[in-house]
Length: 132
Image (cartoon, rainbow, N blue to C red; front, top):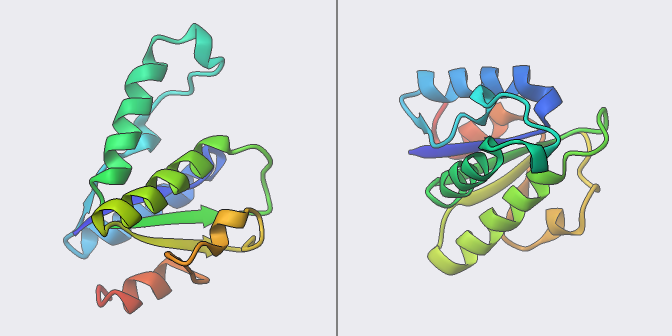
């Protein structure tokens, strides 16, 4: 199975641990955005377009989309775009399964879209999907 893991760039260490756990179970990460170098301001960086394309392809080619929501950081607009892509792809193509985990389940109205499943931890998602 293919996974896309979304979280704030400041939560990069968590994403790396998530990749490790998912890959240890024999699954694939569609896009390892954690390997991207910081590129703000976006309008001054030639990598912005390539990163955006890579992330979109990663989301829409995934079987599972997992977004970690957190109260700890402000900002994080990209993960909301990724969530929107995941919801639209699920409605249009039937995948990915869309999960939100973490400690801030009320952050956005789209967390409550009918295709979104809210769970507490990554392990809970993997267990529910039969991967643990």
